[in-house]
Length: 200
Image (cartoon, rainbow, N blue to C red; front, side, top):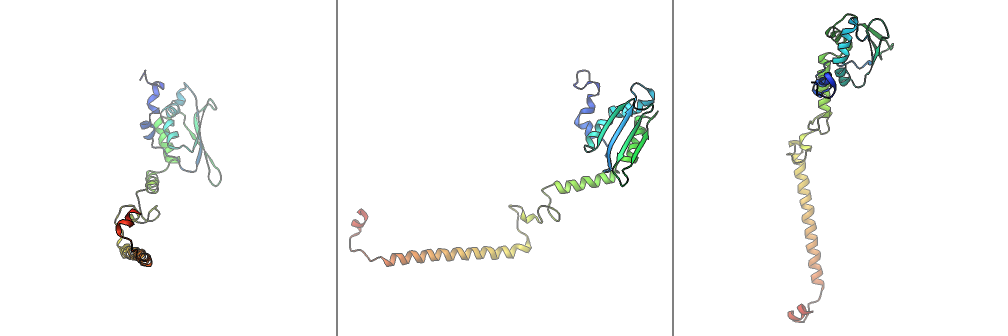
């Protein structure tokens, strides 16, 4: 890891690591502020949280503003600003707590449940996928896709449409043939031999 770009924590900036984060904040959470004390045992858990979990948290929650502050208070804490009815704030004390404890506390209070996350992912996948058809989709039926067999409900209608188009085409061809025959019959027959007509 010495030769990797990004220093000793280069793995925390890989896409696979960032996507493996499980902390997805609720929609009401707008700002997270972290206060930590560098090189202090009271703040070791918050330091580890900021180093290992904060990149995942930022990647999974791009609409949430996250601030890190040093030595703002004698104890480390996480302050959360939520957009609710009363615009409330939440303060989480993190002194002498391990990274896993802080992570579980944030998950239980500020994050969505796995069921909510799965439901949102399914809804987003259904909306995004252009291959889907049915209600609330771009296409109502698969017969609207080019090259597919038409629906049984539209088959008779399609047959009537094709027959009407064929009848129109036959009538147009008959009219053209009739006009051509009428034009030929209106010219008087010539007395000249065929050879003279060809040379002229």
